[in-house]
Image 1 (tube, helix red, strand yellow):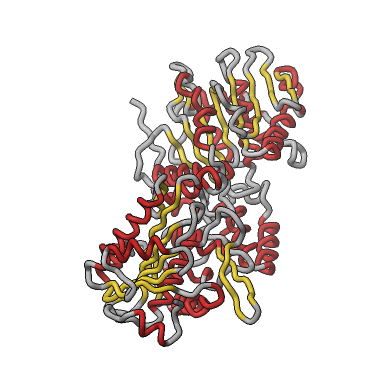
Image 2 (cartoon, helix red, strand yellow):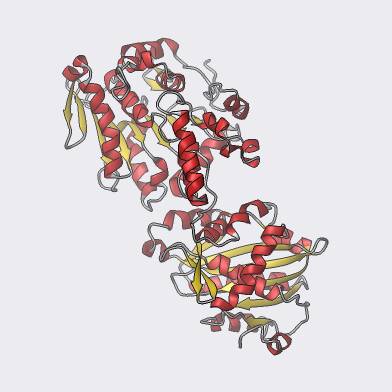
Length: 560
């Protein structure tokens, strides 16, 4: 019985040592050899000087992957034993070449009459980029030009003998409906992660594989310039678990070029001597000198450009956006992460807890931020929960995949009844209050009557529910949070929703003061961050568990 694994648990050592990350060789070497010599390796690289063939160019990582891909097919039974492939590789590492070469070879080798093969691209421009290399390969080879008919306007390549087609389509939700594709390559998967309809779209595109035992799907991507979201985040997470041996799925093969954790912890991704790790085509389609020059330029232009360079050219996953006008605390946010900091842990470690609430309309996040004071060290400990009306999935379609990710991580509750959200918030506050550690709740005085009433009905009245002045009057809380982040006395749970909210915040000058606002209008919210600032405004006053609002009012530190 044939045995193999698609896990590669020693990938960190392999990538440092410049060894292959493929966990297995071709399962059927004879067929792989016929496929490589009879099709793939004979194709010409038209954008390389001298137009060498794939075989002559000797790009080890690319040819090794192609060999494993073709060698996963059993031509005796007509079944493919590895049917899903996930490839994450830095920009400029011949991704378009992979798409063109493998899909054209699959079209040559196909035996099924009128079979459909698809390259699904996120945009029309990306579809053009995916189609062009395939067309160029055909034009550079007289034999291929006789075998295939090319329709440039429709982006369809037809095998004239079998009637099988390779079509490159831009994703719009309609072009893939009803398709019964034998093979699908999904290009730039990270862009699909930004589309609210991507899940259904990919299901439509790959649905035909159920009746095609020889069928396959290849997910191809670089990292995103933003934190991964939607189908990209889900597929990347799954691929890493298969690679690391946490999930045993021999039909799914991940090939991920990213830095080991030890390299990232030491900021080694910023050392040009390590750039080779995520650029397997270094010296061929990728120039080491060019990468160094681009990195130096990014350093001159600031952290935002550096992060974009790291994500696209070095496959570094972005944790938060870093705009030029970002909040100063964003630079220190990630290093103060403590993933063990759950609500239960915050309560256990703290001798005193305060809360901050940021409310709003149907389009906003209702957010609760809890801030505890560590009973031993005095450090501040943060935990948050947010709620949003389900209608936002329609009004903010661009951000909907990210909202659904937050919901899956249980940091955001999406529901159709706003009163339910308020009841859940109050229940959490009561849970903390019963510990005897809750001192006060601070909130934006505007539009919070329902929240104040709901808390009062549960015995948390005006002596402990206080209004926090907003706008420029929040400077004290904002600066206090910054200082605590810088000196390492503020800790948070490392939750993606908070990194997102922090990354969305920008500093806007207001005369001699400043304010924190959203980076852009629309679905990129900062409500969880504002709830934190409300909590900090109370905690910074060093409250006691029984301290009343009146003493703060006399000092003019809180609004009426």
